[in-house]
Each structure stands twice: as C-alpha cells, then as structure tokens.
Image 1 (cartoon, helix red, strand yellow):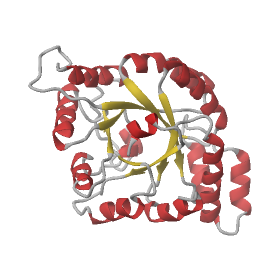
Image 2: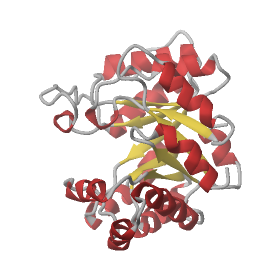
Image 3: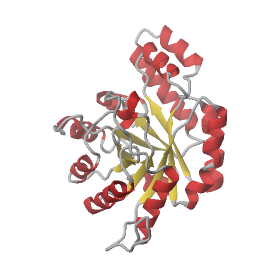
Image 4: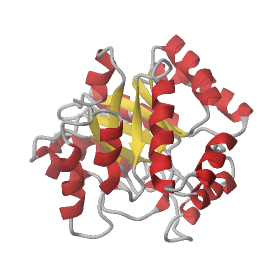
Length: 290
C-alpha cells in the first residue's frame, strides 16, 4: 500500500519517511523498514533531506522492492537540472518505482556540507511539467519517448509561520491539480490552523492532503525548530508540556499521537519524520494502536 491506495481508501493513512544511509551500508536502513512493515500504510524514501548528503533514494527503493515493500520516492530539484531530473525519473520507473513526491529542496547551506552549489534549474511547477510530460510519452521539450511512465505524482509543500506564505501555498493547489498532482505532503507542523487552511484548499482542488509530523525529542529540539527562519513554531502548550515531563522523549511521542488524532478529519493521512529516531518508530506505532 502507498499513497495511491491511501487516496482511494476511506481511513486515515500513516506512512513513514525513511532516510537512505549516509554511507554504503544499507543494513540499518533495511532493518528499520522491515521493523515497521505491515504496521504503516507505506514508506517514503527521502532525497538528501534537509541538505544532508545521503545515498540516492533509487538504490534503497529497489532493495525494498526486492523485499516486497513498494516505496514512494522523493525526487528533488535542488541538486538536479532538467536533464538529470528527467533521467532519474525514467530510471526510477525502470527500477519499479510507481509513486514519486516532487520537492524543490531546502538551502544546502543549512545542511552538512555548507557551500554546496544548487542546480536551481527547475521550480516546483516546471518540475511537475517534466513528470506529466514523461507520463504522456514525451520529454519536457516535447520530444517523443521510447515508452512512457505512469507515475502517481505528489508534491512536497513547505509551510511557514507566515500566514501570507501559507495562503500562497493554498492558492497554488489548483495549479498542482492541473499538473497532475494527486496528493500533497506538507512540511512538518504542529499548527492546526495551517492544516485547516490547506485542507480546505486541497479539498476544493481535489488534491489529497497529507500532514507531516516530526517526533519531538527534547525541549532543546523545540527551541531549535522555533529558531529556524520561516518554520512553523511549535505551540507553546506543547513546549510547556515537554518542560514538565519527567521523560521528555515519551512526552514527545504522546504529543505526536494526540496531534495525529486531531488531524484525522483534515487530512487523508500523515507522514512520520523519524529524523534519526527510526529505532523508536515501532514504539510510536504501538502507542497509536498499530
């Protein structure tokens, strides 16, 4: 099961985002996914998320398919020009990937190798044009292909503490639908007002909406997230709760579980961001009754 099945279903779907290894050893990556197989409705393999260099998602995705897990794959435009972007999409299709999440990608200066240069050849709209062109049997320049793709296409959308920015995201929903986007995945937020705004816009555009939840580990993590320019702030009551909690990490899991329960009537599902906490995903799923 993945995004396509979640869109077709009536329940609240839960997908887990898993980072490829930072290195050549895929053992931990595979073990993490297998530990939650059957307990989530899908797996999403990231693409150097947050500007951190990691293995391309295509090889790990193929390794998961060899183990009867069919993941969605994130492909970003930050590190690819239009040639390499289309080439990787065709390669993904040839390897068996059927669901892609297109994202622009954050500033690499915030990652593990500051100073890395970005391609910045494609924005989200032009990247989606590439995907829909390949699905129609042509490349982005209109040249015919030897065999076409048929991706289920999603878009990753950043959200902000700036209401004006979030309204712009909401206003872009019709464009996403016109570009063949079936679902949108929001950046991590615990702000219910953001979900309410974008849920209404997504429903009108007939785009399935998935929120994202980053598991909170500590008070210092919340303060760090609140300090990031433009990132949605963590609600003050959650910060107060973490401060009082004798076991911070357990409180973080409980906060995430309660937020997902509230998000159930606004989103088609949610994507869990482990951020190095993949080993605790089974515990969190137990907390959710999975």
